[in-house]
Length: 266
Ligand SMILES: Nc1ncnc2c1ncn2[C@@H]1O[C@H](COP(=O)(O)OP(=O)(O)OP(=O)(O)O)[C@@H](O)[C@H]1O
Image (cartoon, rainbow, N blue to C red; front, side, top):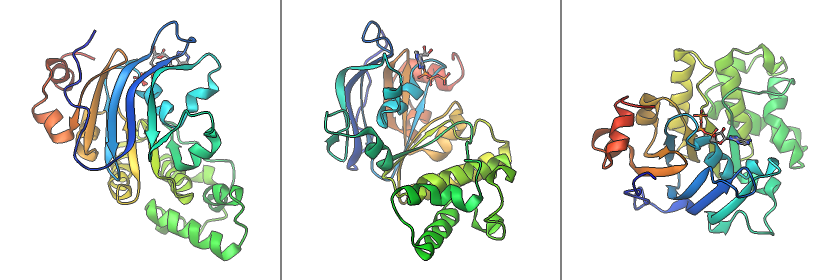
């Protein structure tokens, strides 16, 4: 057992995502990978999940858009996740509809083997948007929002696979924002990038918080402290401490958090 979380409400801002006593199992409930986690992610802020390898950060992230549904033996064992007041695991909630509101950016950038333009237009076309000028405007807006427009505006018809790794990741972010989700989940989005590309994506994340609520899993404590408003520290499937990022990194309430952020374990 780890210590009880010292804070579940990170701030007084209204929460967009409310996770309440969540339990999650990969093996039909025999063991819980997520054990009674409660935390609230405020709207238009960045919340970082940190903790040692295997503590359940990515699993919890994937609960927020029900990606774990794809694992046949997975099960929510207790509690709930509400997004904008809706229980996302209620029987009438369609996971595909949910994922339109809760987009995801992965560790390994994964553009489609299509043109730069078509990568961004893809989700809009699926939504039935056919008008060329509407698509052109939306693609330009998303690429500008992802700080990529100036680098690609003259080669929108070229393959996305010809971009550098950092550009491909920013393209994946543009693809996600183009369909205007409320939430963007990011699972170690910089771990495959060099320091310069990482700095660009971090800058981008700081910009994106103006329009989106972001939850990011990161192994980098420096990254969490640079870009997040709130930080949640997990250990063995439990939330140890959650709160304002400055507080967590300068004056954590729990010794385990302090040991982790100071590099004494993990
Ligand atoms: N699809 C799966 N089926 C069964 N067990 C899984 C699955 N995915 C992850 N796990 C297990 O769940 C636990 C938590 O894994 P998870 O990837 O969520 O941790 P993490 O904190 O994100 O780790 P890391 O920092 O290494 O990515 C681990 O023991 C892992 O082996």
